[in-house]
Image (cartoon, rainbow, N blue to C red; front, side, top):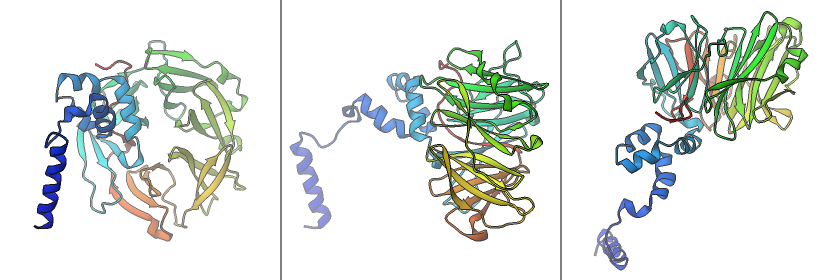
Length: 377
């Protein structure tokens, strides 16, 4: 008897001993099926699974499932790059193993706003915060589900001014998606937080007591890590270098954090979360620029990697975002050129050209079922 026939006979005897030759998917139980199998599907796969039956539609449409699914798939290798070009958006899958051209999918912008007036400010768990430059209104948007919500209110809260304001998306311990808006007008500063659960804004009074916020510092948008929303503040005008502030989302208070120290007068940074740890790319040393990668450990910083000398460094005026678990990062310049940085290689070999994005407005995001509303439609 051949090996294949022998294995077939053994399988039949095993199944016969258990009373049947096959098992039904229903025997798994709904809990196991949902929270061990369906929760691991890509967001588009979950959407198709809702068509199986009414029971699946009911369970997969809950906010609880959406949040758990988001935590499961919000890993670096699931990330994509979205770029706005004309009335359409281009979504590029980021696969470091594929050296060929990146194929994009197209989605239609759901907003009643000119495409060249739409700014993508930041992304978090599949949600993008978008600003309309012609009106200043802020919108939270999920490009996959096409759901969006305008969060600006009649009392001018949620009206964004480029180069003056800063925002940050985060989620608190109640799984309430929130938007923090730092607003500066005529030398004064206000901080408000929007709650998607209650569809309302409230003011952070503690922020007004920080003296070092006076003047004209340049704020980055927030980066959320371990319950803290981090902001880099460039104080070149006041000759104070770069400062790092952390906003504790539970106590709703700001604290000044440590930042890597440099002897140079001019330096800047890009915050990024890698393996749930806060990292920063620091550019320093005018006129011979050097770029370092640092990781926060407790209240101090550890240098991990130094870029090879390339004139001019491609990282200048770029956004840096972690995209894989193999030490690779995406660098998108302000003119739309995208390159990959591989920290496992040395010299010029660490820069891998990817693609030219025709849209200047873009962001890294993960396709999730997260909703800008507390309740699903």
